[in-house]
Length: 200
Image (cartoon, rainbow, N blue to C red; front, top):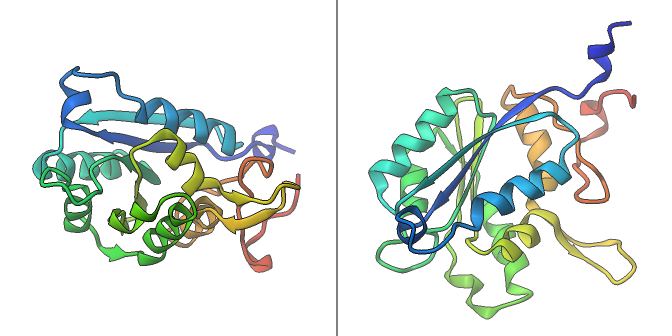
């Protein structure tokens, strides 16, 4: 048997930190390292990251998302620019490049964050599909990024509220992307039995 058949499929993932101040060097960006660290721990697949650090400008965000999708990123995660402030335009820019909107991701992120802060209702994260790619806006803080991706656990380690990443592998299956395999201790991906590949 071909050894490569036993290996998880490689995946290209775009990670985008959107911040006027970080992109101009006023402070050090924390979004890209947080995204890369979490994804490296959560996925068994070999990952090629496409990182971008850009300002809060609709045109730049539009162009960056399209560029990453065209470069073959099956998944694009953004962080920053999703609040109500005047310069927060990430959701508008994301919706502008969408072929389909996936509202459940934003709804679940706000549900998770509301367990910690009442101001979670001010967040406007969206998720969309463009071509064969899933694009998700995440919160700006590394702690909130991990919480929304992983969900909330009980004291005994069992899952209390599912994180959004549990649904990402199957979503990417459905849009024609690679078969993502998760490390269950970080975040267990869910697929219906009919979509599961045999355990290796």
